[in-house]
Length: 227
Image 1 (cartoon, rainbow, N blue to C red):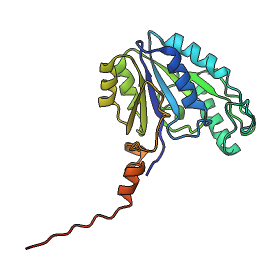
Image 2 (image 1 turned 180 degrees about the vertical axis):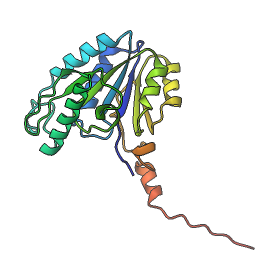
Image 3 (image 1 turned 45 degrees about the vertical axis):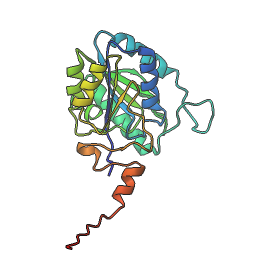
Image 4 (image 1 turned 120 degrees about the vertical axis):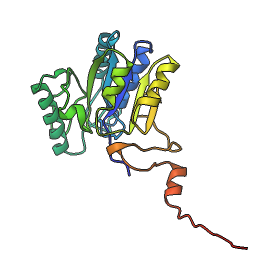
């Protein structure tokens, strides 16, 4: 039983920034954010925060939006106008509480452009609930420990991700992030059917995936012979 998420990505100072930016932009926006493992929160080491933010916003603003079937468009509309209005309301709430809107935010009907914010206060909906729309929050952190602690500070735990070239950092995240799956050097929006896909906390019970689905649909029978 999969119940959604609020997926965190950690970007460390030792990673390759360009592929990190490309992966996070795609992971956040290709499905209009209407994806349970889409990127929503990005925790960026303070030493590379400005560089990542500027590249991320720049790449986001290159996204073409509009009719979903048009080959030149990267992103289409949301599923209903009510959902688009909700995303807009959550964004406005965050800005009213002190967040800075870096790009996007101007809804037109069902079309919500790729939206990026920073300085998002803790506790607003964008920070701790599942937006299920094309909105990403950027956070500056001092180290990996803070990034993991803040990643875990929500009621969801489906996928987490970390960008690093240090295997020790990768395994720290693997041990400490409270999620069902860890993606190293790709965004949270990565899965294949053979993976045991699922989460912890409010992100669900059990696992999807071919082998695991078969197990869930199998009724074990115990047989005992006294010979």
